[in-house]
Image 1 (cartoon, rainbow, N blue to C red):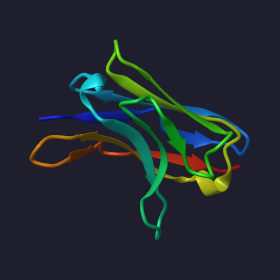
Image 2 (spheres, rainbow, N blue to C red; image 1 turned 180 degrees about the horizontal axis):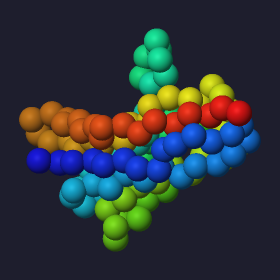
Image 3 (cartoon, one colour; image 1 turned 60 degrees about the vertical axis):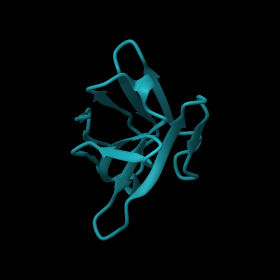
Image 4 (cartoon, rainbow, N blue to C red; image 1 turned 90 degrees about the vertical axis):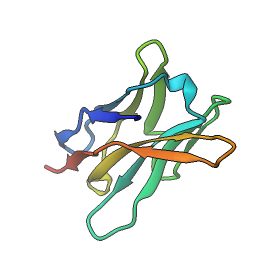
Length: 119
């Protein structure tokens, strides 16, 4: 059973920074993709950033230039460094992982961590 545990959320003022962490119960190298999604109240869950097994990282337009996703395979952890935060970044942020197999992809989600950007 794969577990993803996020941490690092909180309240920050506009223009501030936060770093989210996602610790996986298995090796991050065993996943074909990992990423971060977010869901604001009344809105659909949306992709923020994702990295594939080829180490290609994609960012949502809203995150490009402000957010950086990275991973430490030795610690089985991925990070999302968020800078220049805006009130519209307020959401629950979820860690995501996908593992492909002949039977099809299996997707895993963390429990989410709240990020609130407000003065």
